[in-house]
Length: 549
Image (cartoon, rainbow, N blue to C red; front, side, top):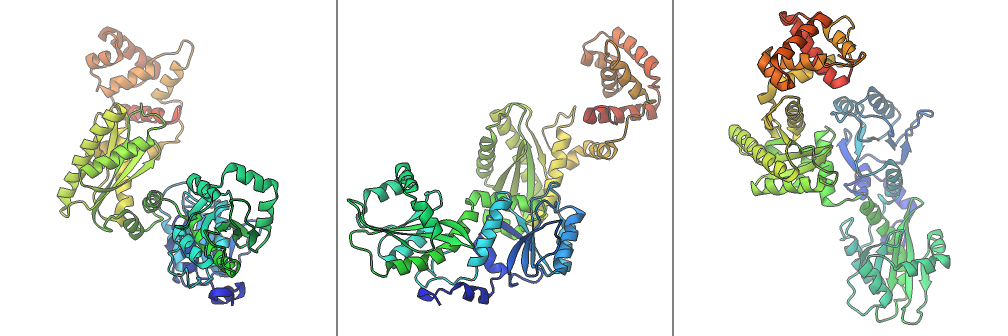
């Protein structure tokens, strides 16, 4: 056993680091647990990155499925193969489709392998190092003097270490940025004061230590380095904090009024081993707002847990809730994301709604919780809030704002369904000719259904013998033309000549001449309902995909 009851590395291995301990050391900002069929008490023996050229997997390892879309059939094969090889957990990235990986979850449950997802804020390279360091540390017991310090509470750790070593403590990362410092009341030197005020060691001091080769010596040794007192600078001790071969930072101790205790180097060596777990946890931890975002994204994508979102966002897991899909007008500039988020959050708060505002491409999603227990009243709350929000967004960002209202569901676990209906409603509102600015999907059901039909038809080639194809070819010919534009306007206005003429800005007689020429070129029989329906569908598909229908 090491000093102060800390185990040596062999003791840590013997204790068998578990998945639960590893996730605790890693912190909430790096990994999200989706399912653990055998519980979190399984022993983890290592970390492996998936290599398609060397598919052999290691029993007891955590497998990182880099580059595998969790929605793909290949992901299911990875999980099954991993389970057959004794892998205890598989980690996937965010995926490209954004859909719920239900098949993957089911495969993991059947195979008995834990399924985890890398958060959006943590890269694969960063995750590999953090996992390997966390694995080394997950079996290390805490020093009795710092056992009460919550994992990740670096300021509490600095105070505890200060008591152990009898000096003023700063904890720094590898870039000499101050992560935490002890609340020592005694007078300290000017260098410590400047370091704390600037939240990093002054540049001139860092440069001097680099030129002297100090950092090379510090990162290369596992022992405590003593720096004698010099002028107004008191004596200092410094030790590198490392785990799994990776340097995580350093702990500095400065004498504060009295010389450092004789046992200070031994105490600092012991503290560095405990501090490693805190630094791994700190590195994976993000601000509370980002943790809430991550939990919300994971839940809406079908990867996360309703209980996790409830815990982080303070929303009730059960009870009526809904999602609103918000799209500001086209005048919104690239710097408006924070402004939009703040506006939506403040306005929801003004209505006394518990909410999470999640930025997404071109807009935001608003997750509403704790709605009225009566379903109809809850629906009215969502409708009223949507109408109010669209006015606020329009006032802030200009005309063109649209808000799709998601269906009211029974609990946070059902929010993905509400999000899908909100997206369908928003997409319908953004369709050409749609005047409404706020709606539930049920209120724009015709447009929603048409979009789904268009989705099914998209990719079909525009048959050259159809009337619309002939008009497209004519317009693309010498001198161009407006045949397609004229037909679209004519059908949109139900064949009403005066209304169509006004929409095109031409005289009614000119329009009649165009229509005659149009039917002559295309062979379109405007009296046939089937011909008009086919023409409408192909014009909609042209709007989507150029020459596709």
